[in-house]
Image (cartoon, rainbow, N blue to C red; front, side, top):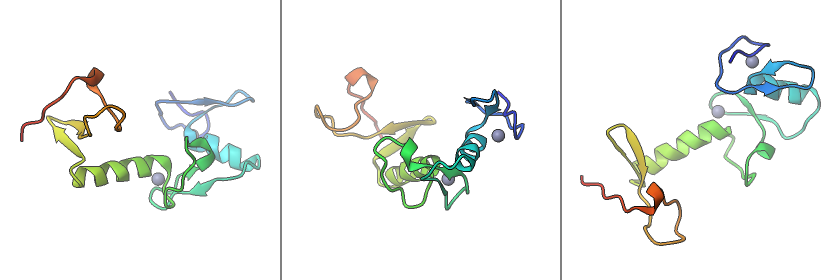
Length: 113
Ligand SMILES: [Zn+2]
Ligand SMILES: [Zn+2]
């Protein structure tokens, strides 16, 4: 999909009320121009983001949602909470019920290192 404002190719598009197909950044710029509050510029990538769009609405230290997501994943990887096997990232969790993320339809996955 192509943004009708900046011509960049994106995987998701926002349909504005006046018929434009906008990428996330162009849509956020439109929201800032329309006076919507809460926007800031990410200290890493410079994108506009708004914590009001995030579930939980917590402070991410000046990072946008995407930068925070990957920074956090990298931190978890360095802490051994995540491992990469054959190019796939696995979360090393507490196997007990009710404890964090449990994937693989709750099958137990063993990682041999
Ligand atoms: Zn755009
Ligand atoms: Zn960012």
